[in-house]
Image 1 (cartoon, helix red, strand yellow):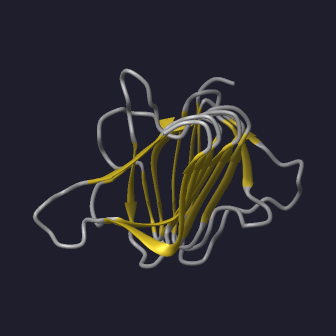
Image 2 (cartoon, rainbow, N blue to C red; image 1 turned 120 degrees about the horizontal axis):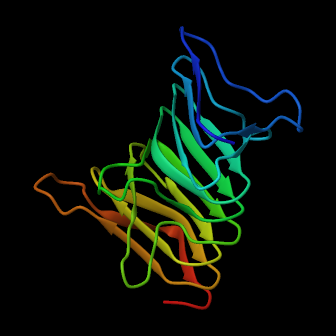
Amino acid sequence: PFGSTLIDIAGTSGSILATTSQAEIISDALTLNAAGGQVGTNGSPIDTETGNNSLSGTALADFHVSETGNLDVDTITAGGLVDLDATGWIRDSRGDGAINITATTIQLFSQNGSIGEGGGTPDALEINVTGSGQALFVNAQSDIVITDLTSGVVIGTVTSNAGDITVTATDGINPGEDIELTASSIVRAVAGS
């Protein structure tokens, strides 16, 4: 595919939903906006194939996308959960240190790759968790490199099967810019550190 695709539901109650499991959006760059609703559902996310190009979008409620291949995130903002699943990596498409994902809860799953970019030149996936309670759930085959840029984050579960985990928060002048672990939080690097 060549070019970019914008699906923009204007209004106060429209959503972008997949009504069949065969529905898939294939585009070099993709923007999904549902300012008055949601993008996908928990049981039926929007299936995408962006070919190492960027995904952007907004949703009043939740934002659910399942990517075939690698997923480069530009900016996604949701009033509820952002749930991204990719068969490859999930990374920052810009590499500029600005927020990639803003949501009350963030759930990321990379089946065969990393989340953020580790190694010699790390590039974190930047987030802004706006919810209280356990709000970050991440699972990757390889490295996990995430930075919360604004309000701190409460860890739910962060697991890397074969890489290292780096979760950082900005240490500004405002109180509450912390990384919190509760009694049920899990941070696990199975074969890393």
